[in-house]
Image (cartoon, rainbow, N blue to C red; front, side, top):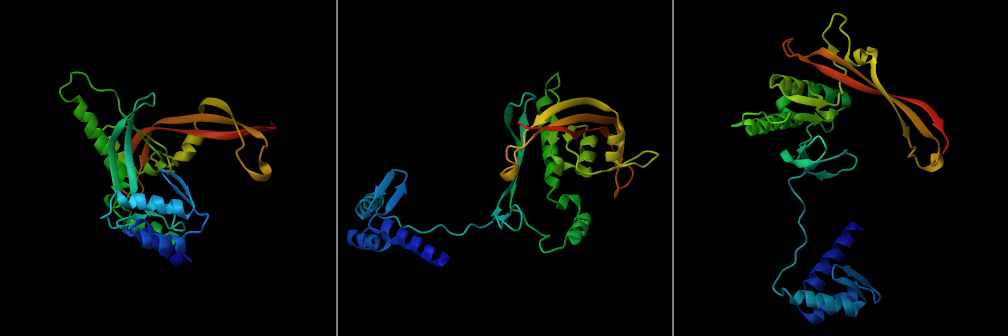
Length: 284
């Protein structure tokens, strides 16, 4: 089926829109198009073989010496998304500068690359083991560290020749950036950052607790109640809204201990969390 469609599209390109001889073009249109055909193109809508023939002829007359060829297969792309989709493209990692009011200032740094999936075909456990063996500078996650370093370099260039320092720049990143090496680099370069935590890291204290447990044990610093609309479709469409209680907890001067690195590679900082509790349901 796909081969047949490809053949029809190719013949339409070559024998109709790429054909300079009016008689041969009309013969191809009679073969490929129905009498009540409809052609939708940017200049408008053309109905019937006569209208298609005139449009194709007028278009061809604007560049009679052009040779039409179909698009070649894209090359240099890598897998994106999940393997089941089979999609290919380019991975774009952008560092965007914005003000505290959310006004975009521009792109500070950007990486565009074709992903090379070296883990395809491995089991989940094999992937974990391979990732542990791979040095950080060989991982895709290194892009977060490069983005941080470029941001620091850019901000430092703004301070050159000025008596007053530029405003504080805070790097904000999603939980994919919760990499211990990134935290170490930021601490070493005295860079401010806000990272959405993804790893329940080991805390360096007498009890050797985990970070999530330390935050859960902390006293709530603030509380806020919000109403959440139910967006589910189907049978539950139009069901109850939810009242959610948000609590903010934080701990300061916490030291995170690396699990696979020397003790001197440790991170000190403030850590906070938002916990959600569904309080009640109410019908609309």
